[in-house]
Length: 230
Image (cartoon, rainbow, N blue to C red; front, side):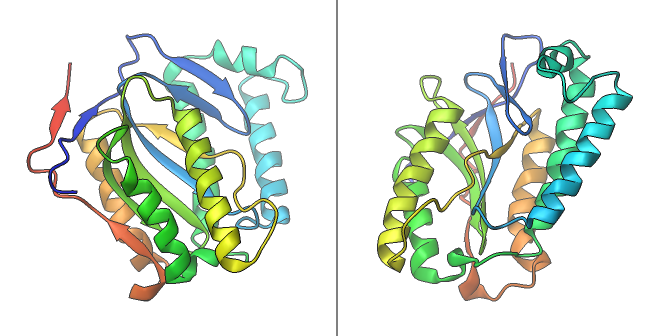
């Protein structure tokens, strides 16, 4: 993939962006770069997730928002952008820490399975997006990526998961849902933020104590990459 011309844009809160809500809010801005985490459905124990939901509800109440109200997302959306970003980052970090404990069946530990994910991510590197790096862990995947302006975060994540699920289930002789439907995603603010996520990807297997055969790491040479700062 050395002939791929990579371009990465950064999030600008002064420009138009959209926010959708699931377990966490998801910011989206055309031409921006994202750090995305998607995980297998059994990667976070239910007890851990239940505790996380209670902690999130308490944090919303401290912000003056009733988490049980039907319009809580509208109230959250009226908060200052920095408060919303910090909230999302804080609660995504808690879940990401649980992922590194490698709960569940961890099917991606199998090199044949992780190769399905890696090849799929690399397939459209250039035509649809620019990859800043990725790591396929035993029960989750981290991707640093800038989508072309006509490619949406939601659609591309859905495409990745759909294709990978079909191939991996076929390979393992399994049926049913492989991935948790909702991903965690962070809009990258600047070059320092970008490098922080690159280092996170690189260090994640070391932090989890994995052997070389238990993960797939891809960090392309970005010497000729173009970073859009305006």
